[in-house]
Length: 204
Image (tube, rainbow, N blue to C red):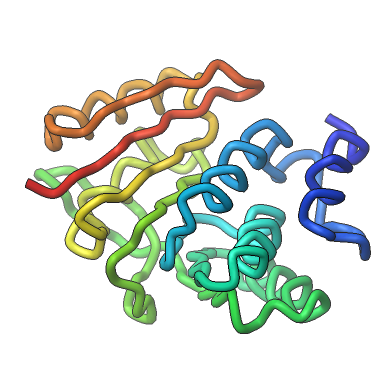
């Protein structure tokens, strides 16, 4: 996907000063459109994303258009976190975004060991929107699985989860793991460029 594919979203959000696009790591326009549309329609007050970059900028700008909301980003790469903060500052979106350098730490969940983000500095609670686009899948088997068990207590009574790259077998498997643990969740799959899993979560 070339940067031209992002132009409609940039026009919609008023991002006229360029965007932090990288072909290898940036989310595809169709995934970004899904999460931006969700924010503009449902107007969540608290958004948490795993990973940072172009998603952060667009989510923060959507919060501006809503007149409220805040994006908290967990980013394991110190340089990536700094670059995202610089883009947020360049657009004057600091009041709507907090990018946390969150190194990957060992976590044991259900007897299995994972490397996942350090959430010590994350102050967000009542999370209405959870976006999962990290850690990288090559890091470990079911690399993104820890997000839900480790953040579950911070979720709002009703929360929507979006996961990118959901066409991959690893991600399909971990969605099934989540659904076993949260049987009341409603799952949708969007067959876009990389696949998107959407879970509608309600605490019971």
